[in-house]
Amino acid sequence: MSWHDHFGKRDCFVVPPMTKNLLREKVAMNFSKFELAVIAALLLISTGCVKVNPDAVNPEEGPATLSEITTAAVVDAQGQAMGVAREDFTTDTPTIYLSARVNNAPVDTQITAAWLFFKDGNNIEVNRPLYDDSITVKGTRYFSFGHPAPSGSWEPGQYVIQIKVNGKEFANARFKIKALQKADVPAPTITFFKAEPEAITYGQSVVLSWSTTAANRVDLSAVGSVQAIGNKIVNPATSMDYMLTATNAVGTTAKKLRVEVTSFNSDKPELVITDFWAEGDKAFYKIRNVGGAEAKESRTGIYINGLAQDQNRVEILAPGQERVYSFPTLKWGYGTQRTYKIPVRVCADDYNNIGEYDEVNNCLVLDW
Image (cartoon, rainbow, N blue to C red; front, side):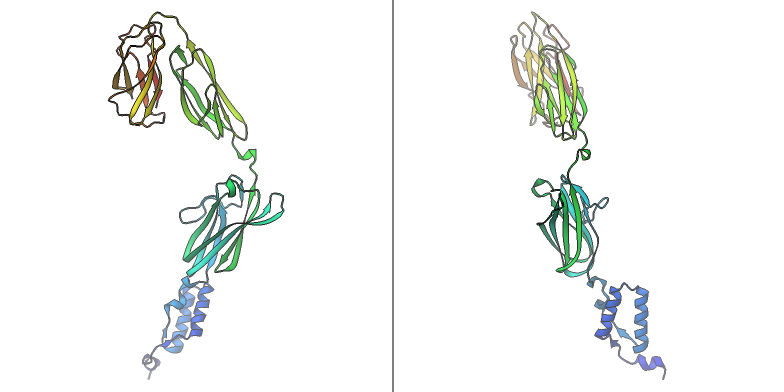
């Protein structure tokens, strides 16, 4: 009887627990598939055949390990740190993350992280608890824990994150917070500051517009505190300078521009548009008679992208009188805040029916 005949008739032996444990140990030692195959073949030769429980060599059964442990200012949707790994941050860092990769974690593996303020900026030990995190995982994946600065700002010093896997200490992650220095903050800049138009006749309006970067505060003379990017319609009575200042911890940057105003004495009416704004789907404007005589009824027109959109009737205006109107049929669809993309022109005396001192100053032109 041949060896195959003899052993082929036998039932397959089930691998005993000691051998199963051996296989688990080989997997944990990262033996290659080829090496495991050799082990299985030797068992086959010695017993005729082997029944191996698939669970015995399932790499997902651990033991769980952690790798790529790092702190970062940004993580992706999977929890992996983005950019260069960091251990040094500044007090104004919005959020600091602990990121790591868990490998071969069995079901219900628990990972915890305790954040401590270890030493202050004078290297005095503090050991103040800050945050406690916990997550339950399985398999191989990235994860992260993130926290904003306590009380709005990180205190300068050294921090420790104590990491445990299933209650056992695994590793500590450390990072430092340094005080924000002037060198860390760019100087404020004024990208542009302009007046449209730069020269007017008395009674006309001027649109001042500006854009700044890295500024904590922006001020416009004769107006006060303003947004970092914005615009303002002004009505100077005489020629004047406007100063825009942008300020932060580094210092102050300023720009100046001048608006020329030509005054006149006239016994004729003079209609000008002094303001324009939007509320919901309505567009509004102010019209004033800055001349020395009464202005009879007239029409005001609005043009968007160079095309006429609507008109409305303006009642008689006495010298110095100002009124507010809206356009009756225009459905304003460009928002209530300017984006500087839509050319808008609002023109008083749109039909030129009123004999004025200056027939070319009737329109307020701006980019909405």
